[in-house]
Image (cartoon, rainbow, N blue to C red):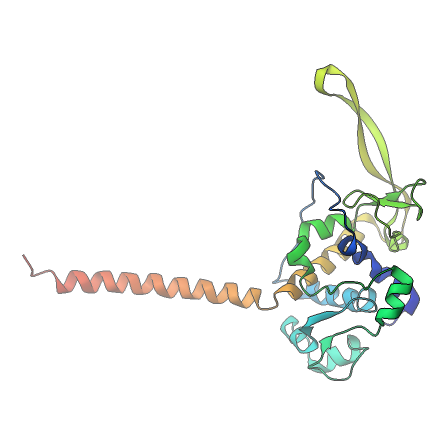
Length: 250
């Protein structure tokens, strides 16, 4: 699972700049629906692997402990062998070895904590952002992003996704009957993954980020359903008792 450190170090910044940037970005863009399913343990496991390999070198998740990954049906030994590179203690939080000094020198700022990024930005925004890079010769980095215009970070996952272009694919009548261009992201250079594979790759990562934002969400929801069922049952019992107690009262 360990890959080239610096490749991942740069790759981890993919989630950093949208958070430290001052601009809101992406206003008015239609967000794609993220395939979030907290019951899909396999997806969450893949997302955890991606997070550790591509994000944790720069970011940290100070509110997430490695031990919570057992909720994903992973054993402590599996977590230690495959997902723990910065510590040997299963109870430690997901911190990064990147120093603040190096982060400021390389990225101009300290990458933000990703513990609750999905709750802050929203799963759909993250899913859309990670799939919306396109080539832009006017940008200093050669890249831009539909969800975050003028993003200062290049598309470091382009080897996986490939290169997209923001192209005109047709025309349509606009206000006043004037013809307006129809623009769309078009894959112009295939990557190592097919589009559907890359979408799943990103979807798994976003799924994990949602889980990390509230690890107990699935259990809480399940418990809530059981409580509502119990209260409904008790309501029926209470109504039958009331009817029995008051049946002889005139």
